[in-house]
Image 1: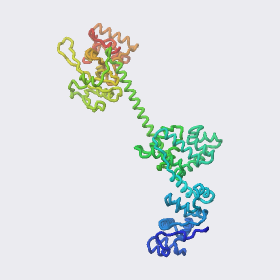
Image 2: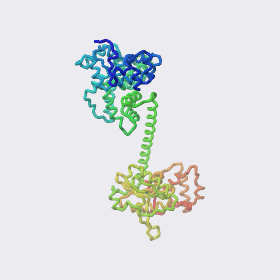
Image 3: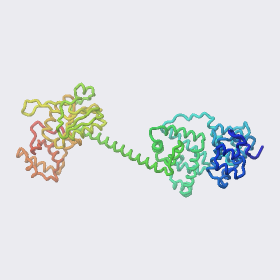
Image 4: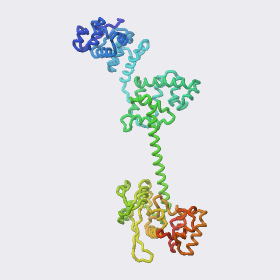
Length: 560
């Protein structure tokens, strides 16, 4: 075998030997004057003689820089083929230009050419053993052989979705890659402990690992840093079966999704690994696997994702609290409904049959609180005549327990005391819950709840609706019901007694008389409303007056 590579091993595919003189190549305008003059000054008549020099030898030459080097190697790559048949493997493996040359070709061509450098017919394992015996840097050649082995196998890694099974498989494959490449058993265990995939414990700190192995936390940090460098190189350069398997899984579940891949990776780590895994290391490993560019200080990206998660969690918590509040308010409202003994369970079709799904009265658009909004639940515009009604309708919109509602869909006939003219009362809204309960609600301002005329209409509504199996209640926009207002405080019982005594003596109590009896620091608004409800007092605001309700009319059914 020959033991030297000469210029004759470079076979030109585009130029004859006579034209390889630098002057001729300059005349053909295929190389620059800078490169041609440098070759001529060195006394070379054939450009191939420059190919034999290493990059470091060329850069040490005077007036020969990286631009000239790049131009020379590019010219060599495009126009010359290296024929190394007959040379010894050691010479081939040690030739620096071969690695540059091999790296620029396809895997199949590279492998075919490398295999020709050695004895034909040998197995791949035999070729690998030969490569290991050389003391030269042959990593790129070995990588070509390894990649060829993988490409020649028909690998099907299956289809993967973003779930716990994929998370478990990713952990298993990463553990295999670490054990394969971090050869020192102690360092391998330290790296797995830091990552959080060791069997003994999860997500240990540097100090905890240092105490476990009786070394300083700084030494542990150095071992982790070295392990990370190895893993980074493997994920970007190595093409072993485990790495390809990992890349197949991560590419399927993180790329080509509607969510930005990095955010999806962070959410995946948080959901399936939680606090057991070191998210910073896992995040970097997955990003490098699928070829995502990450910043040097990518912990800032993690911090941003964490902030977004916290904001999202807070919003979800607020929505959850709001749903609970609305549910509790509806329960309070249902608790105050005056129900028939055998309350019916209604459906939407039964409502339509009863003509309870359309407005029975024209609205007064001159009122200051008049307005409308589009209801997504009802798929139509809802009209209201006061702010209290609007607030109540919004609560019904957001409640999951309310199936649907109609405003002023019930017409209740009644007669005024001592008169024979028929009147009609139109309560504000009729509601059907998902459980089939149906009830009518009159929405009033807080003080209007205890007015005598409100009670008078409510009694007629109860008498009319109970026959139809429908409940009735009165409330305000804050879902304060008569039942919730009718509480008693022991400290005001003496004041109540004095007011009742004055009413019984005079028959009617006016504002100035009431004010003389009451200390407003003790007897506040809520106490006053409770007093009206508990004692069946007829209250009128304009003018202010208090008197006993007529016989047969009482608040008792609404507060018990």
